[in-house]
Image (cartoon, rainbow, N blue to C red; front, side, top):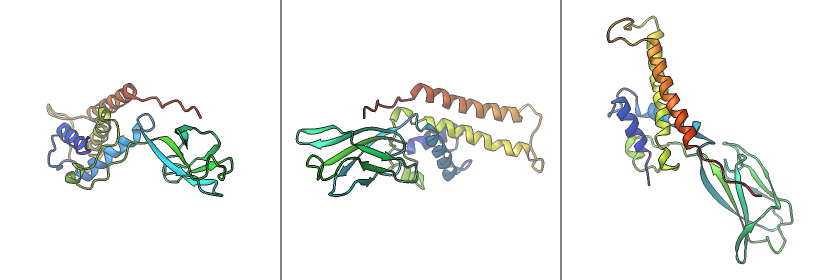
Length: 214
C-alpha cells in the first residue's frame, strides 16, 4: 500500500523545501489535488456497489460519481453466482449529484426480489484530504502506484508559475538583468517543461476503460 505522503516527499525534494517554508503544506496539497483532478478520466480506479432489490422499488441511488457515464458492468446475483443484467436504465449524476439506477422490469419478479445487483464503475482517484504531513503518512493513495508522480509534475508547473507575479509586479524589486538573474521567459519555459512532462507521461500511462458489454 502506498501513502499520499510520498507525493509530498517528491515535491519537497524537487523544491528543496523539506520543511514547507517556500510553499506551505496546504498549497502543496492544493496543487497536487489539481493534478489528481487533471488525470480524470484517463487515469481511474474501478469501484463496485451492490443494490438489493426491494419489493415495489424501481429506483435506487448510486454513489456520487458512479453514474458519471462510466459504468463498466451490471450483474445480477443468481443461485450460481452473478450473470449479466440488462433490464435497467441509469439517470446520470455528476461529481456532486448522485445518479439513479432504475429497473425497467418489475422488482417483484422471482429472479429479482431480494437479490443483489452489482454495478461496477470507473471512479476518479481520491483527492488528498490530510491536513498535515503526519496525517498524509497514513492516508492511502487510491490510484495506480505507478502513476503517483503525475500529480507532482502538475504541481511543479503551477508552483513555478507563482514566481511570475513577482517578476511582473512593478512595485516589487526584482533582478532584471544579471548573471544570476531569472527572466520572465525562464519562468514560463520551466513551468511549460513541467506541464509538458506531465502531459507526456499521462498519455503514456493512460488506461483504456474496460469494454462495457451491457
